Image (cartoon, rainbow, N blue to C red; front, side, top):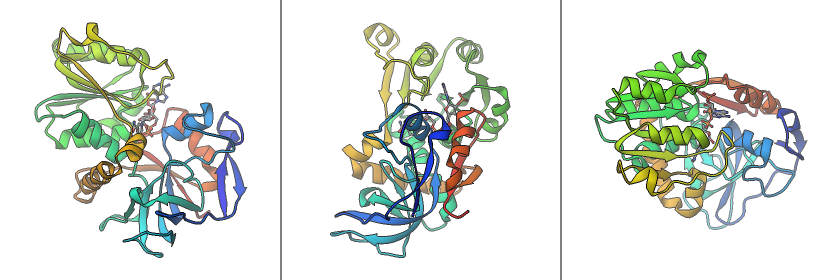
Amino acid sequence: MRAIEFQKYGGPEVLKVVQAEPPSPGPGQVTIDAAYVGVNFADLKARAEGYRVDSLPFRPGLEVSGRIRAVGHGVEGLRPGQEAVALVNSGAYAEVVVADTTTVFPLPEGLDLRTAAALPTVLPTAHALLHEVGRLRAGESVLVHGAAGGIGTVAGQLARAAGAGAVYGVVSSTAKAGHALQHGYDEVFTADTFSDDIRRVTQGKGVDLVLDPVGGDTLRRGLDALAVFGRLVSFGNAGGAEPWQVGQPELYAQGRSVAGFSILALAQSAPEALRSLTERAFRTVIDGTVALPITAEFPLSHAAEAHRLMGGRTSTGKLLLRTTD
Ligand SMILES: NC(=O)c1ccc[n+]([C@@H]2O[C@H](COP(=O)([O-])OP(=O)(O)OC[C@H]3O[C@@H](n4cnc5c(N)ncnc54)[C@H](OP(=O)(O)O)[C@@H]3O)[C@@H](O)[C@H]2O)c1
């Protein structure tokens, strides 16, 4: 089978097509003949700087859809030939992917394999950021960074569906604003001016909930943009800054909270919680509350092009790889 791996960290060009033996499932695992593979920003971070890479060579990829090829010892409720979608810890950039059954889902009725491959990371994550962690209430205002990307496209629609009073987005360039405005956002600002913009549109009051995948100075400015009793959820470090620390001075006076979320860490620590979160989140696509447009699709062997597109910060919505040429 073919897979995509890198032997050293670097630009998209380090992604190479390799021939490998198809894996066999261990106990509690299945293998999946992949049809589509989702591209995530975390894949770029792995390739460029070793984020979540234990050793080299490394095969990136966190989500896959396809047909179950084989089931390992002790697996119940899944069978070869069944269509499924899975979140995996790594290794989805391949024609055959191994997945722990705790994060394998029979293809939900009403979804096709292409649509489903785009969902396992961003959809439950956006749901958790707004609801399980961010505890959004109807009428509250939300600010989402990376508003035109995978998470951002879903978060805008989910926030609107939850009855948010205002949904604000932040993007790196005005060219992406139109995409965000079509996916639930009331207003979209650019990263350089967002804190002034929030002050202006909220008449100095601030927003109730900030979703921050960037970290560093952006996280600090996001905290300053919070209203009294506001919450900030950190879920990434796209800016590459040192890990953040927040203490009494930033929190006490205004009753602010800071929380965090990682879907991959949740998959390890509380797989049952992840399963029910994912099932709740899938329902929002099945019932038409949320649509995640796939704006570009590449053959698996052209994974580097997908990385170039996302790394160039011009992509919107979701990027996919397909295993057919
Ligand atoms: N914690 C979790 O469970 C979890 C799960 C999935 C994703 N994430 C995080 O959520 C974010 C979006 O992920 P995605 O896969 O949906 O990707 P994406 O949004 O489709 O594309 C990458 C995003 O990163 C932003 N970006 C790129 N370089 C940046 C930089 N140097 N500083 C600030 N922003 C930068 C881009 O926004 P602009 O160009 O508009 O700034 C773009 O929206 C990523 O940070 C990812 O790590 C976290």
